[in-house]
Length: 92
Image 1 (cartoon, rainbow, N blue to C red):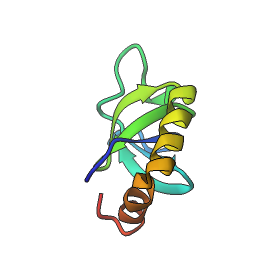
Image 2: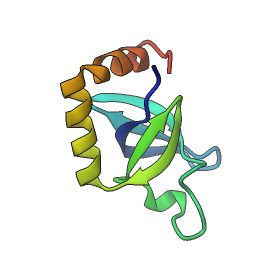
Image 3: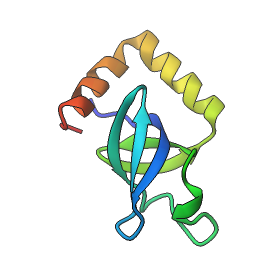
Image 4: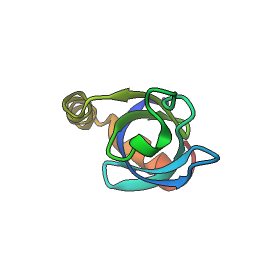
């Protein structure tokens, strides 16, 4: 199963290509920000944002409280381990 999993944008790695490094429960990986960047929220303002990550794309911005609640629920359900393993091996 592929989930949208919360992560925090820690750095912009390529503004032109809209790429960033996102920390997902301690796993840092490249993510495309094209779906969350617009004129009102340019890429330069994305560091520190929490996003839902799915197959290498940040699908939407979420607030930190919602991100933490979601991570806690995923941990309880045991779903996060499968997703983190996939991220570490580059499968999602």
